[in-house]
Length: 391
Ligand SMILES: Nc1ncnc2c1ncn2[C@@H]1O[C@H](COP(=O)(O)OP(=O)(O)OP(=O)(O)O)[C@@H](O)[C@H]1O
Ligand SMILES: [Mg+2]
Image 1 (cartoon, rainbow, N blue to C red):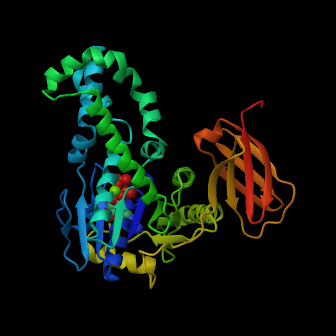
Image 2: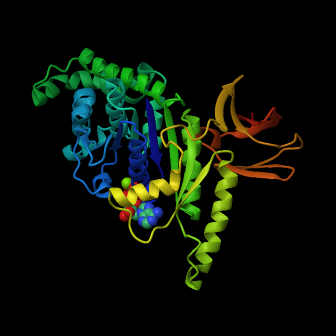
């Protein structure tokens, strides 16, 4: 079983590459399910076929697709909790529709989409799941929440204890549900049990790979570095970087001369930043890539004779760990000799210099608030330890 998650900034080509990869995977004979978890679905447009919440076959062998609507999961895992929080907020003067929105944790909808995906894994009907839009930072933080009781205490204690108990009769009247504390705790526990197994699935590099999609422009490269940092922080394996909309060599119009030069320099930066991860380029096509035929053509150019379902890289160059009370950032480097390491931290950027080697790393929030304590080369790895400022 393989799960491949595509992620990237808005509009860079995630849906296009997910659909193309799914087609190629199906052509290899893998029973493949393409799933869009984005609320603004466009997988159906890309595949030029109507899609629904449940998987349905696409007009090509071995391929199914779905555009998830997680309403059912939301009710099952969060319905009572949501009603409880909303009631409390309304009591505090928040308008009801707003309270309803606030009662949904940031990232929860994405987690619920993953819960569904877990179900498809357990069913064992498919060999490969291709997910259009990996969970964002908020969802990853929820996924990373180490244990439910602590998380619940921090986020909902105020609601669940005294205040909510006082409100319980109102809630029961409003919802006609026996909303006991045990029931709510039980529902949260059930969700977090699911999340725990999800985490195991997603952090198993043999099962799950993340593919980063970007365009060769400044903002997109920067955003992708940040996404890469977060994926690495949460222990997901990124197995490839996909630069989409690269102007092809046959474009000679002087109007595009600057565009081409800028794209070339962004491509250099991408190769340098993500090395040793493989970087794949996808040309800007003559028109939008819509329909099975156009997608299959793009996929052929992209993957050639490579099986797109297999991990494209075994390396996990960026790791985060916690050792002896320090947070450690570890970066695998090829061919770097030991020597004096210069570090310069500026907000959430860490610039590293070692001989001719230069690299700017994007730090996750937890490290951006700290300062580098020491750095060393150990084996093939650059290791940087962080400490509290002034410690
Ligand atoms: N290489 C390409 N050449 C030409 N058109 C492309 C290419 N890649 C994507 N497109 C077109 O660009 C548009 C946006 O692509 P797509 O929907 O895949 O992006 P996305 O990252 O999924 O966007 P969103 O963030 O809105 O979900 C689509 O119309 C798609 O056909
Ligand atoms: Mg999309």
